[in-house]
Picture 1 (cartoon, rainbow, N blue to C red):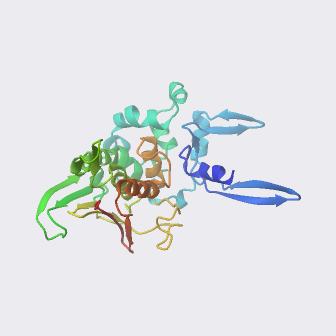
Picture 2: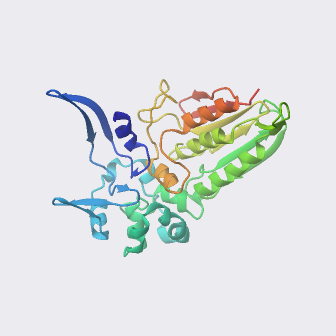
Picture 3: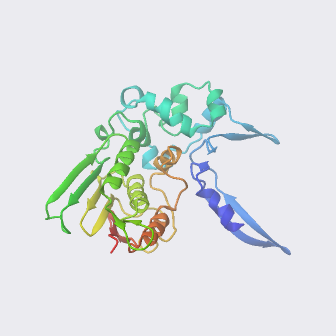
Length: 326
């Protein structure tokens, strides 16, 4: 029961992530599970794309006015960087509103809510934490919906380099910069991973089996984590994917954050530098649930016969090394 209740924080149904504690307590002669949830600093909170409010003893779905009042309760001074407005940027000039209406809204809001929608575009953006108090688009909005995110966030791209050897001084076989909106970067990166993973056919035995130098699932999870949880605030460095003959290295600008430290990195602790970016990627299907990326990569590597991933956590970056299957 405790595991099930604790999983409510990371299963992706409640957005933004609730701050909650689950504990086993004894009251008189009865053992109970206690769930303590802190008030959200970033309302409105949605469950499966729906916002609910309490009206006396009744529970109702929030109206546009309800959501507007909840938005006004945000503690703007305590918001993370990805929820802060981008000075100088405007919704009309810098966001692709067609992408918002056609691609993002149907993923982020329940169908029946959209069908009854009477909100204008700015109210919709504000309810989804994509517009700041002054009306400027947030960092997340620029990353996910921006016409050209690098105009405002110069380091917001992925750099891929493949080497013909095991050192950066070896000949470069391929080099690509993936720019544009973050979802586009991740889709293009997925195609690059599939293209570069070497496959061999094992013809021993009665049935032929396909062998891969790397499991696609592992590299995908590590790369998505690197892009979603990187430092966008004060780093101009891109996420770097370096492909060597014997290993793949993925560098994410920015060190650990919040509850995640060097001594517990990759051991189940979760904390989000960019919670709204993570929420947007969850809405768009790039994450199934939160906090399982590294474990998914470990399992995929083990099943494919690769060594476990190696983590180098420094003050300015996190470097993950994935060794080729022997």
